[in-house]
Length: 245
Image 1 (tube, one colour):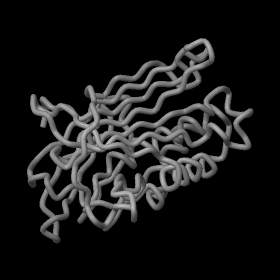
Image 2 (image 1 turned 60 degrees about the vertical axis):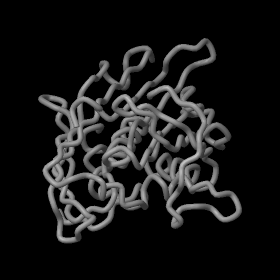
Image 3 (image 1 turned 120 degrees about the vertical axis):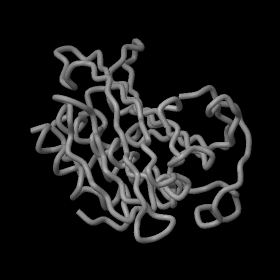
Image 4 (image 1 turned 90 degrees about the vertical axis):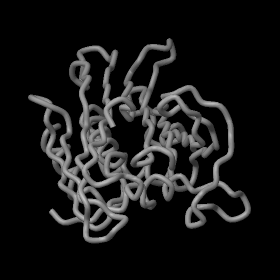
């Protein structure tokens, strides 16, 4: 499959269809970092969350021949385990040179063994596809558990990232050094008109940490939800393996 650009808005054909078929972070402290002028909102100096995550050339700082490795964890305390057993695996991006100097061809290893999930490859990619791969896999699982329309959930996340996300300049630790980063947090469904049908998952919170100092720019993603007693309904994490690449 040849893909010149990948966004959370347009990747459904590559990942969501497969997800539906199969379904049936570092310590942070506040600090400012310069933002790409293309994503800085007027009058605030803060980037738009959706643009920052899905419209930037994150792969330009990844040398061809590099393998980016991300550790993935999913667990849930919901009775009868509708999300399946706990999963601890990895996503690997094998990065090669592309036609455009700042873009990359990317081969994906999404999980291992029996957990293997079809994804990619992506050709001449400016952005990091792992963020979209994580979200599409996540929303496919959530839609299955809620017996909901995946498009409704996807549109809710998309709208929230565009309009209601909190974007904060922070510092993070990367390979023993302090780097400037952005922390993005959003709760897409907390005021949703259908939240009473979401089995307590209406408080799903998404947290992203990105930094231009990190190859591929993504440090971590977390999607989490707890019940009123503090019980874990869902916890999903993706984090850049700083020891692997």
